[in-house]
Image (cartoon, rainbow over all chains, first blue to last red; front, side, top):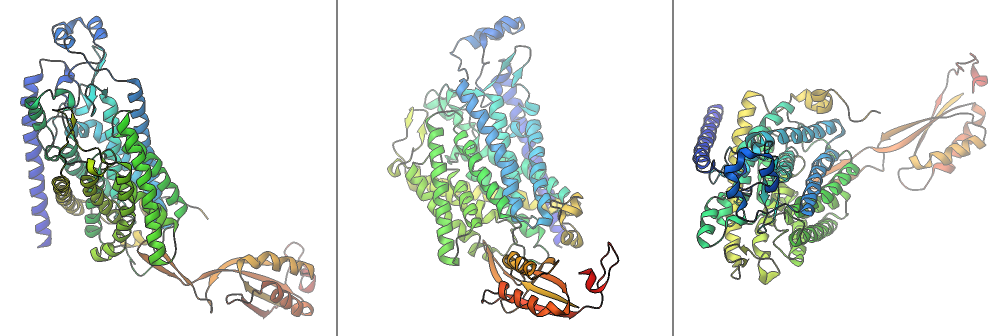
Length: 518
Length: 112
């Protein structure tokens, strides 16, 4: 009976997925037909309509002559070298967060016999997602399609670089007339997709089959990460908005949650809630580790965990401040908020633990830092520093509850507390973003691109409701996709290794090597 | 001949070794071991998970000696390895049938 149900669910999800992609392709085809007349970059959503260096274009490419007059008419924004340099560094910082940061943070928390399996899963997921991102991920997440999926314009990163005209497309930022090379936006967002998928493996660590993990990640990335990123983050940019009418037209092209007005600066919903929900469901579907609750499963190296957490903290400045997309005021705001909230959460987690359990621990310090980083992520470009301080202080104690009280309540063996830290911290951060973004509480408010000013009429309760809806939709979406994907992979490959392989340790049984030699 | 096997606190090893050298003991064998006695273990806390660690690390020192100095070896270990707190360890004394030095084939007291 259970099996039949699983078959039905997977079949349903596949049909659903196919239907969505078919409809988005249809939408895309019509959109393409209407825009093919202009330069190749024109149909890209976040891309400015024309090439960056028009002078060179005309000189080298006489074939493009008919399009040239149209391109030359308005002042074309050109990327600023400082912005480009900062965003390239920010991208490399996010890579640092994932490998080695996340890999070591997680690796130190497992038993020594499973160290390499964790390092491998994070490392290989990173590589896999980067490849998938450049093949289809970027296009489905960040080009114009419907409210759930992007289109096919940028499949294989097509159209960003025009070798004939020697031009590069640009991507818009949050400031009018400020652009960055679209390739920079592609790689920056690629690293977000990669770390999000890497986060999930902490939930079923020490028992999942390597091939099954990779298969699951492909499905989940395609049907949950990409649509959620599109729903929350896709918009056509500020430059198309000239008045109320064009503002409404452009807004209607954005993702579903973006249209609702959900605020997610660097990935509370898209990254942390999305991954944490997939994680906790994985812990349920895969089942508890052999000996869970009876044998010691103490972390084998909190030294590694501390190094990993510190690399996460450093790299997170690329993640959060980089999400401003330019080297300017908002990036600086995001930077100070990320620093302050994380420090506050580290203090409050350790203080809470000291009071309740009697001793302040290194693992508590590392976990508190990550909880603070998670919680400030959606808020970092919207709230003021004192808002960040409150968010951080709350994140430390609430996530401490997440890995204790809530964990016992849920009853799943979420090995490395992905849900307790990223899920709880993500939800807390997403909700508090709606509160502390309010100018009355020192926040930045919401910028109105039609009136070119900060919306003076910020209502906390309205934004809290929007934030809660975005959280709920992300939980549901990721939950359904993850559950179906786990069941499907479990039927075809099997999510779990055999019991004797698990006892021997995944390093030897799955990868044929040992992390440490006596 | 006797084989004296002493289980001591790891940080006492150096003191014991020095004192034994001074009374003429020519060699010892040391092993890192784990065990429990009256000291019991301790609990470790990792986020929500609490583990009781039953076995504590100790150091085992083995010395083969002539009957004549057995008492002074035991006294030396007692004097140097003792902290007075629970968990100081134990000394076991066994009869030793034979000792052979591998390099020369010498046996008995000549082999120490």
